[in-house]
Image (cartoon, rainbow, N blue to C red):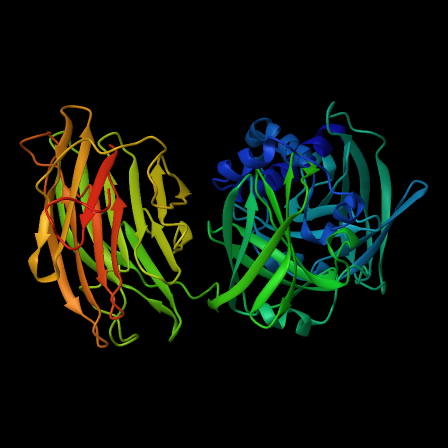
Length: 577
């Protein structure tokens, strides 16, 4: 019986570990910025009490992951229910379980979740605010066989397990604890249970869905500064409220596609006190807390990070509503390869909200090494906005199938509105990666290898590194009608600095009189083996605003450093480099 209990504890620990791993995203820059000087906030106890935000200690996740490999072989032979109806008797209920001289009250959530292995689970909290998960499984012969519920509470040093079956409003079964570190199982108690009428509400957060209305289906940007670097996080909130422990909650996804949850309730005194919103994005490397109050379409508050179970100091944060959305409102996308690469984009316009962008392929080719490149851009439809045009790119894209098996999908934000980018490879009914590009988060890379996918991003200010100077003269490209001249030099590993070749993509004039020219620079095949007109190294979009302002936008695509130049009016030298 002890061996069986231990194995089932590992089963749920594995599921818990997989869930946490699924929230992973590339937050290395933020983690590094915080790691140099962690300081706990004075109201630490408040954060410890935010149990409804599922902010469990990092140690527990790591412990679960360490046991994953050991449990995997056993779990493969165990039937775990994938049918949410099997958990229906527990949805939204409260049960009191008695064993030995102890009694625990478990308050089950009202929504079940599907794990990475398709098994269905339900989360709960006990009377002390400790979180747990329950599944419906087949019991092995050593445990009497048949089917029943196995619930695991994640405590600091033990996994507390409850094995039980239901008979109306009563339950019967067994209870035991397993030491997290030694994996030893303690005393096995017989268990009896009774369904109670205890209140679900824990008093920390509001149970009124109307308190979350300012966030319903909206997109918010939150900006804060860490180590002199400004960060902007985009949170896309869902439209459907659910109840967690009786508290009204709302799900969201951030700009990397990582899920989170927000509730409304009392803020810590150290963060201003009073009632406000409390959101958490749970990540393997960095937990991100957002505490804020809303006034109209703006917000003020604080950002706090959690690293390895410690909380950072609070950082002042501002927010603004930038659009509306539904998490279910994904684009149809475009399949651009025979083996099922799907890409898509949604532009968050001021005029019409979220509109799906249209894909326009520019070209494709294969290198001598066997790499395949596909490039093009997304643009807004003229049916949606007045400035929409195939000759007015909003998002440049370069897809690279490396001959070593890696797939890179590179998105370059060109426009003013936020643009959500999506990809799946191979497409199997849903997108694998989702992120949001902005005027500061210009570059998004979604990449695939060995059946796994990741997303990374880069913040750009357009300034060259300190002490960096141009290498020399070049012919460049002149636009006589506009008195503009541009040019680029690619610093190749093979041949040193070489002048890039210009390829114009198109021109257009908007309804109000703005002019746009776009195209790309590429390396000449006479200079390097990978040089090709269909292998862009630098995308360019030039905007002649009706007000008289001229924006020359360069978007670095290639691996080598690239010098960029412009001159207005064209006097034979250059004003900017």
